[in-house]
Image (cartoon, rainbow, N blue to C red; front, top):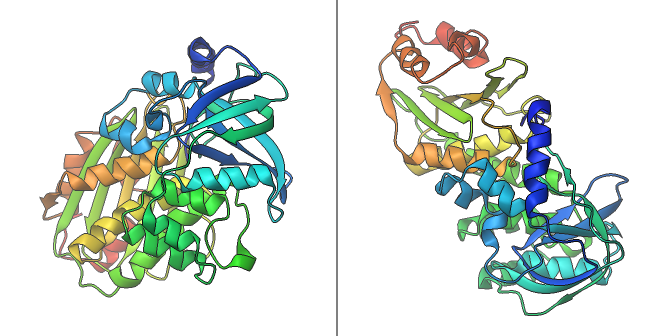
Length: 384
């Protein structure tokens, strides 16, 4: 779970965002990254909308967690971009597409920014919303209409799959994922109802679609992972971005998965786990980050054709003063496993190494870990 914006940082944050907010206007043209948002309040009659700056060009970095992590972009720089986007929206029924919904679907197809003309009913207010799942974004303004000024650039595979009304959404996601379509792009397609058999297609709130796609893809990977042999030594990966520090431990054993998150202030603490047979309920403590983390780890296990007990420690410092969305956590995990593992022969040695990189005492994690407690009972050859 991402922490709420800390009260002592909120005033500074809003001031920073307002510096970059476009001059309020009712009519403008801009290049949306593209970024779309489908709300969940009053479901099935929800607000859906488009985020765009008031200028044209390559705006993809405004909505690109993979680029933020790759470039180690500081929060204030991300917020500079986020503060330039206006969010226009309309009320839409999830099963009754209208002209505005059709345009959002066209945008979701695009792999590149799309130039559009916006007509708003009211000028946007220079204020911003917070979310534990999503990157910070502007307060919404009602849209009168929007006009596409160019054709979206659509990957051939995306065009083919979206046009097939006989393929289930899970199969469509898997085929696009195997074709190296970005996870963030899959989440947009899923959210605006572009995947699945024709009768099942509908709008899905953005925060639900993010978790759903991470969950579906990782479960598909796990079908294969759970048939592989176990790793034969302890491996540790670590990385950090904007106050989010990860320690990822892989232990010999059948697949189990656990995430423990603690703030350095110790005001917040979250934990969820699953055994070999998976979860039956939503991970309502760690929430969306749980599924983003699991997808990244499953990608690595599939790559090495092994299974393991997986324990993830996330340390959240005060440097993470504004939420950037769970997308950065998925990308940070992906980067961590790319860096390659450090190998250990015992749990004691492993925790000693991890301790050197944490502010929070490592015992705060290890002593509450469900996997480590059970692992100690099952694996006698390792030194606790």
